[in-house]
Image (spheres, rainbow, N blue to C red):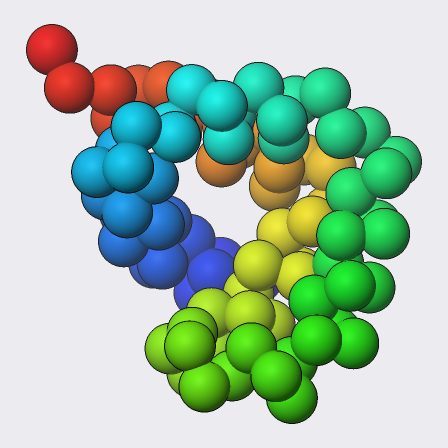
Length: 84
């Protein structure tokens, strides 16, 4: 699971570029057990989404959504990455 953290800066940059860093952090913190449904949606949508998302990112995101401690850590990472 540690290897998923190497993708976090890329995800954070993307979210910050679109002004979604705070929204994503809040959503991750508030999602709780519902995040597992998000992971299942990603698993089901992989055949369709793999054309638009780089290889490995979908699996890493699904893994993140299934692990509440990783979600909290990524939300904290997003908040720390806020531009000054």
